[in-house]
Length: 304
Image (tube, rainbow, N blue to C red; front, side, top):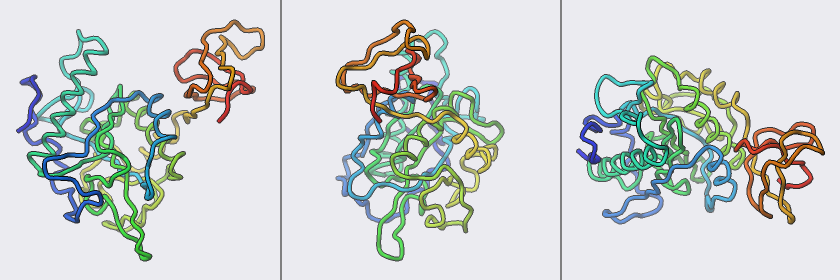
């Protein structure tokens, strides 16, 4: 069983809801057996919101979202009775050290999928309380939900999903606030770019076409216990809709100045170079509020 150099990160029984998620159809993008489609990079919510608008999804972009929980590894706030705990042993670590530790753990999950399950890819995103982790590239069909991975419609057109693994075991507790905010940020960014509705549309089991351009979860396909009993359809749709929507604007040809308040005479707080992408979470009184907390930018200094 793959491990990191941390002996407490025990992946015995890892990802119990993923073990038969491969639909056994040939991969859309052929990958040599020794290769695995993997990125292994963690982005903040703001970075992910800036990443998605220009992402090259290719000729056939994904058009629905499937939510999961990992169970193993679990988290301190959402513990599984056994196995690895994603965020354990981090009390004395700096942010950079936590990132490095979790990156090694993500690498171990990649090894699990590749060497233990024999797959050439996995889910697209793993989400925790700090980062949205890029796993399998979003321009490739993933493996995470059996028939929920992809389907072909009656006209012969391929459709595939973005598989999102939320770190933790959510049978008895809902997503902690920071986790929910990151899941919402990911779903909102994908919704805006791919025209996916942030709503759940009921349909028969094992029928991915029923969830076209909307949200679904692993329980709609082949795993009733995923993404956890606490993560109901009503809960997750409300969670991703309630968080402030993120918008990426671009500084104009002369740059953009964030001010300390929404007032023409307010002191300057930060300067963004010309054509810099800026993630914002609110537009009020013709001022954009920056997600990084720098301040308020007059709408005339940026473009959508």
